[in-house]
Length: 292
Ligand code: HEC
Image (cartoon, rainbow, N blue to C red):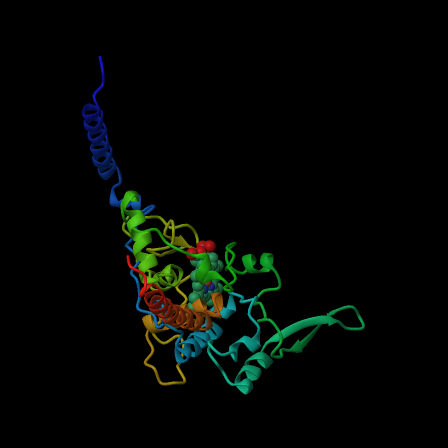
């Protein structure tokens, strides 16, 4: 028997429909979420989109939250105190950054007895770590290691609650809108995601329930509260505000040159637009005398 092309196509389309329907049924929301939990909301950040930039007042507030709360457990070892002065960051004055550095205790070399020597920090020093080593960090935190914050906003992400076959659509949408804040949105959701555990859920010893942390049990107790830190610029304090500001600060720490990158991008786009226009006009005048 000869197989006709139309039969073959019919057969193919039927199998594709069956496959799509079964996968629709198979991917329940709970599975797509990778273990449940609410969808992580996209926040409005000053640095959203192709042209968004960091807000220096927000970065200064975020640094305040980091220093007063998070720095007790989390290091930022790839950042130096001088980075706080850099354009495109919190842009503290040199004097302010020096005062911040001087509060830190830096271990530098050994004294005549061979003991580690301590001195106060200077602008060229990297941020001092809260613990001498990972073993000490774990020993102080119920066995869990507080991760270093240098690239945390880039190192974290989340999965959308959508069927897998719609993912390419979201990739294209994110590319078209310049969405690159998955990590920061996760940080904000984590910091505001401490809730009472659902009834019947047994938490491990010293663990806390968080609705967006994978597995929902996190060793870090809720670090923020309504009035965790006073803001020098008079911004009203709230848990959400603290979470927003510290997340923005961590986004900057992960990508300190974002402002410069976007500035350059803008200039390249303007340059290419003018170039395209000139090339178009040149082409028109070159071909004007040729019959076609
Ligand atoms: C008392 C110590 C302590 C303080 C203070 C603290 N943390 Fe943590 N943090 C931890 C520990 C411990 C972990 C590891 C948790 C785990 O693996 O279960 C952690 C993990 C994290 C993580 C990683 C979560 C993940 O997805 O892996 C982030 C982000 C974080 N903390 C943010 C913060 C921020 C922001 C602050 C300040 C507002 C802060 N932490 C203050 C101890 C602390």
